[in-house]
Image 1 (cartoon, one colour):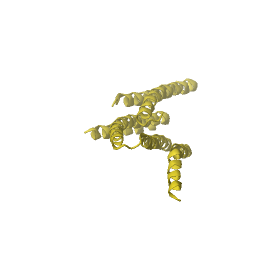
Image 2 (cartoon, rainbow over the protein chains, first blue to last red):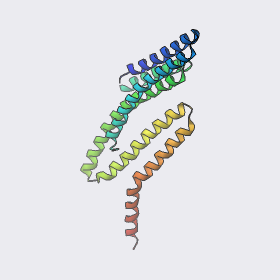
Image 3 (cartoon, rainbow over the protein chains, first blue to last red):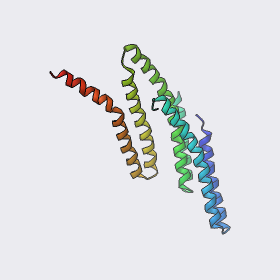
Image 4 (tube, each protein chain N blue to C red):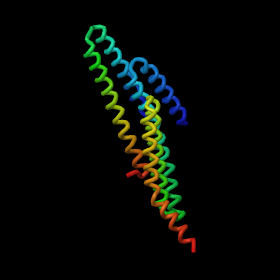
Length: 65
Length: 128
């Protein structure tokens, strides 16, 4: 029951939105969008890893070879 | 009891997802997906124990393991498909959710086909 992954992803989301706002205030729209993209992709990588090992667990439990 | 942990995690995940939602929606979806995954993996571990016991009983009762395995496959397909479809629906993508459920129904039919044929054959044998 590793709960810290939820907090990590929520933290990434908040930091991404903060960077987005800061860069937007500084007038650099493109970098703001790139920062958001980076944040979302990092969170996505972490979630996909968790999804992968969950589906492997389901595969082993339900004989879904 | 683990149910308190599960409810706690669910609530924390929901609050964080709502908190992050108005800033950026993508990560909010990822937070809710991650919460669902953690609770689902916890439940799957428990279901695994139940299935082992059912397998032993079926073995001792002489039931052919193939039927139990097919039934478990169908249950597994429906669990995963329902989980995926629900996440898609949460994100507002009703069409994708329906496609996932449709594919799951097709796969269940494919898995259940041999048993369906076996039942039909046994019925035909009964009719003189």
